[in-house]
Image (cartoon, rainbow, N blue to C red):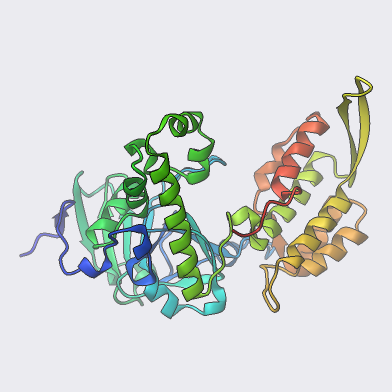
Amino acid sequence: MISPFINVSINFRGYSDKKMNSLSDLSPNKSVLVHMSDYLPVNGIILSTKNASIDKKGLRKVRNTVHFAVNQTVPPNNIGLSWNSKPVGIIAPLDGVLLNNPKKNIIGGQPQDFYIKDRVKLPEGTVIVRYSKKVPSGKLKVINPRNIDSLRKTKGLTVIETSDNVRNVTNNYIEKMGYTRLDKLYAKEASLPKEYVDIDIEKRNSDENYKQYLLNSKNINKIITADMNLKQSWQNMANVVGFKVYKNHQTSPYGKSEFLIDSVNLLAKYNNSWEDKISTFNVFTQKDDVVRINYKKDFLDVIDSIRGNLQPNEELSYDIEKFKDNIITSQTPQEALDKLAQEQQIKPMGEDIGKIRKNTPANKFYDTISSLLDFFNMANSQ
């Protein structure tokens, strides 16, 4: 009888065509999409937060995208999200995902944050890693997906159980499947130390130690070349597949539309008024000037910016024109949110942002909301 346990160091054969020898080898047939989650897919489908969430009032959260990293698990990032405790890791061949899902839903992004709209039907060859305390440490257990209720109607999926860290096992399994870890390949071409391998790019670039390393590095030309090669190969794949390249999710119309609603929610919890005032130091008079803020105007400007970056017939997760009317016709931010809930059954993503205190200085609050909405309009694409 074959044991259901296999060693982590199992050697997969027959996958040499999936390996990348350089960053220029990046292509759909050599790529996997990796998704960390709290939940198993339902019948082989990963639902967006909007589709998966519904409360007793029938309201759904605004996010309508499913997020992945390419050929690696998503690293902890600058906004404090840690993926180390997630109990489920999903590794899906990109070429199969492209065949299984409508082209219009493949939005794009970056290798560390690639997103698909609505839902994602997983292809055959997908591997799901999930946590189970019953599996001995250092071992993996193969499970028949048909023994799991939510996967009973699927075929061609492999389920692996582990009692070790799911994110680490998922990263290891990418290589066991014959694929090349993109973060490792980049680090190799850039001659980066190991501590800069499994790390969020924005977090790495803002790290003072990394900035010092760049100043003193003898490999700066290799780093520049690796950056250029990765950027070019990613753009080449985008051109072939037909997805968009955004600097990050926050600069895409989808991210901005999410943050728009969350910021109105934040304002409703702060003082529930479209207007405020802050004190700014005037270097000429050497005194504080009182500046009035019109948040309603700021929000409407953001909506115009979002609309300007949408392609014809490209849809967000809600009707932003209706929400624009809600903002214009509402006396308070909360009234605009109430209309949104009534008309579109949408609620904000970040309910916990309401913990902001009433005595928070307006200057600090404005900095927070400006950051969320990206008022200073970073470039939307590279």
